[in-house]
Length: 166
Image 1 (cartoon, rainbow, N blue to C red):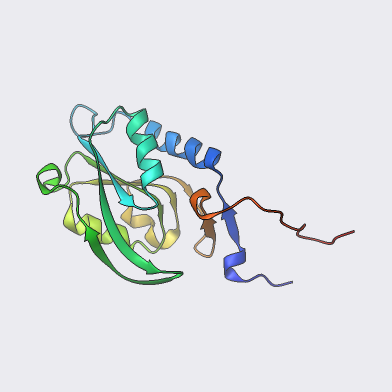
Image 2: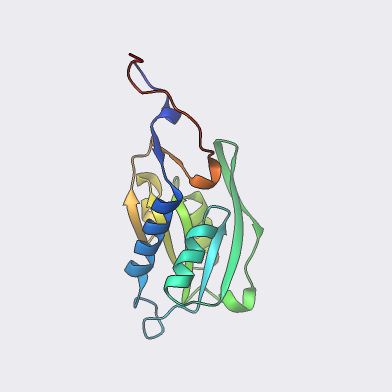
């Protein structure tokens, strides 16, 4: 039986995003440009907020801001644009800033962020091949045709077995 592209899903639980976000923090620990420290964490809203909070906690970074970039309308991609920028004085060219997102897919969002803040370090929990060159640090790579289902997008419900019912 052929499966639709969105059926090639990678379901991520709250526990898994927490573990993977902590792993991201551990990978970034000691690699900031200021004696190994980062000045701030900037979450790409909305998906980057949970991982950014966990990274900020693990690395004891108290300054956290957000950048809101829209590159999706439902499930179709379009040109990325900034809806809300982080504090300009904090950001400068991005040096010492850790930009965190849940996923790099096509790379359009991070490409825009990197143009705005070329000194920033971009980190994601998950990466797809098309966008991988836009991210400096990530934890898990998934195939381009995999749709990642994050816990904030799901509800618990019964799912029938993949094969057969007997």
